[in-house]
Image (tube, rainbow, N blue to C red):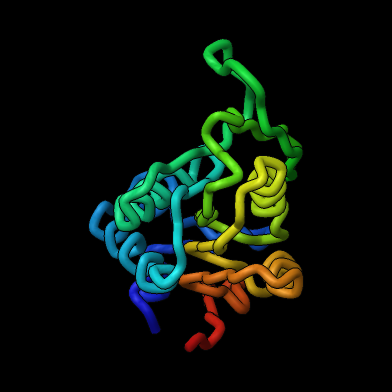
Length: 194
């Protein structure tokens, strides 16, 4: 069992509807030591690849992506979920559906922040159905940049997203893959990983 799985068992909460709450340490309140360890682990898993940018989506992916970008010594870019008055120039846009929020959003990245020369590592906190990642892949590819890998803190292995993305040939690394959860007992089972 790895460090993130241990922390999920200690402080995560299973809620009805296949919801895993990790807001006390990962995506609302952040344990900075844990975030540093996550950044180092993604560097270990993707360090053999050339990475020029780390890309994520607001808001929960930002904290993790910052620590990953720091490990690689590269900028972190995040897709915004709404167009603001200070966004200018050409935009890269994709539509994504949120499993957690049960809604659809357009996500936007200013084209000036992703170029055809970029080698992108996409990072997010959760992977369920894979819609957010597919949107970020679409934005990366529409910029002409190369997706070097997908890094996820927690994957819900019982949902289809991870399988779909792996079958499409993407290098996907999830630090913890939840095989099953039970909201009545609070039990969480993880998939064995190498």
